[in-house]
Length: 129
Image (cartoon, rainbow, N blue to C red; front, side, top):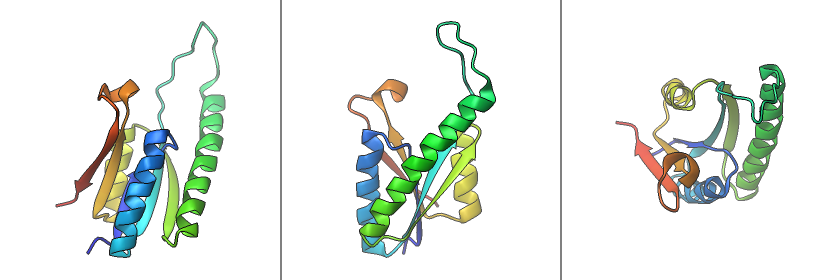
């Protein structure tokens, strides 16, 4: 029924749990799992240190590439077909664009106490109408 599922993935603890949760759904439905990481353009230098945006993007891309590669390997080792993509831009915009482009059935959003203010974090699953 659900042939393609998206996990917006950052490799965090909550993301690792979401990976396992989505893996179970993908296995039950024999679905393809898409992992998407987004490099956000918003950056402000910390403590007065000015780092060129290009260097920050390159570091983010290298980190996210490694995170996606590890997530895909874990899924493949568990028998789940998985792919990974890195996008640049606003996370919400890029996730919605990807869902539309790939015609995905389900996608998940990992919440985080630091960014969302939700106690304990968690995974929110959305179904495409």
